[in-house]
Image 1 (cartoon, one colour):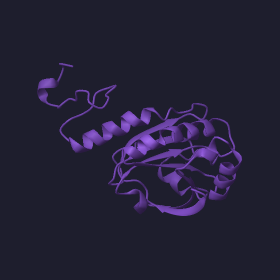
Image 2 (cartoon, helix red, strand yellow; image 1 turned 135 degrees about the vertical axis):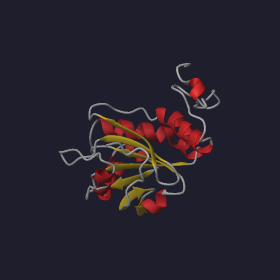
Image 3 (cartoon, one colour; image 1 turned 60 degrees about the vertical axis):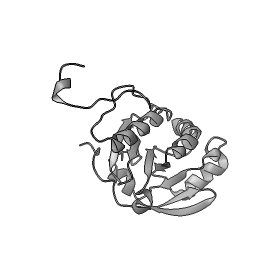
Image 4 (spheres, helix red, strand yellow; image 1 turned 30 degrees about the vertical axis):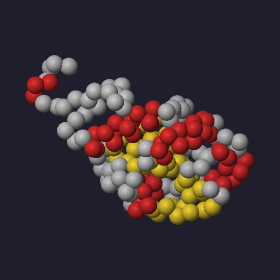
Length: 186
């Protein structure tokens, strides 16, 4: 069952960010746009490439009012150790949430049978409602640059509820106003 259009799960978790352990709750997330990027495990292969790529997009995402959270079933202690050990992960400035209790991974329906989070990406609006979700197989890394247009489209539709963004929509492109007159005309 899809989580799109549903409220994100309530949670309290510990994260590693900016050299500190911090507590993050669902209440901290609400009020702004957010991206949750779940990944299987620290000290692995594809995961650091994805998280490094996400860091490269972080400044642009922040300029759009989006906060980024990465999540794995590792602890916040392991996140710190990985951050201290890896050149790629050491550059990360967004929060790395530990989910050893599987609260978030279960709540976002990305917990695999092996006890690890699947590669799930979620865009959450300021009301805490999931607007986009995508789950990749373990061996398929994600491209964080695609999130920019998805966030912009979600933000546009939120501000213009009577319009929709067609495929390959970019900011400034034409949108559609759904009506009976468009049926069969596109």
